[in-house]
Image (tube, rainbow, N blue to C red; front, side, top):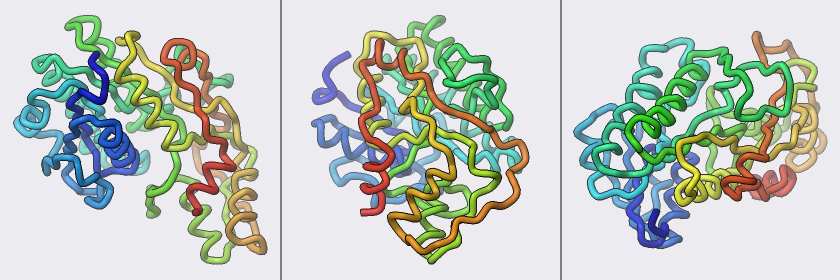
Length: 304
């Protein structure tokens, strides 16, 4: 793989939260960057000025072929990331999360391009033990998790069958500047919105559920490592390895935003996963990737 400073890179979903951060960093590293996005959820202000924008649907093979012409590496971030929407509209989310990924892989095979795929910890479902390593049984509990698992498998299949250089990164709970609120936002975004409104901050369940919150800057670093590693045809967890209780998270945000706000507890979500934290040794040993941003520092960065 040539150095990123000399590479032509395509970021699908490059107007999204993670994709925008990734595209900006690639431009800063000297890469020639293209962004493919239909702007259905992405924002044009996230796309760096130095990137070439291709306004189109990742499900459209002709658009993907145009975007990938002469590309060295594809960062495939385009997806419908909502578990709730996947339950309500499984055919739509499958078309974007699976069918379009297959199209990207097939085009990459023809273009001789590497694919770094945004997989998800959702593929593991509710694990029996933590931390979760890459060999943990995959029992997704939503169409979204199943879709990401299928695409994750396709990446390795294309490496084994066709020699396409692929790396799947299984993101845990990503947060950081530029993440938007709304019905599908992450818990950090929701807690920040509630705190800025003066509270209360509402925790679903007793708050002892754990998650692995990883700052978007670390996710970008994981992608850059995956783009240049010799260890392709495999998958890596992208997390911090630290379990954070949701009630601890609520307190950290309250203390920073609205110290007088109440933290209240409501009914637990149906089917909520009790514990999720990444085992990170494989990424450290093979990719040379370890998360650097603590949750406290990441929240300070997010809150400005």
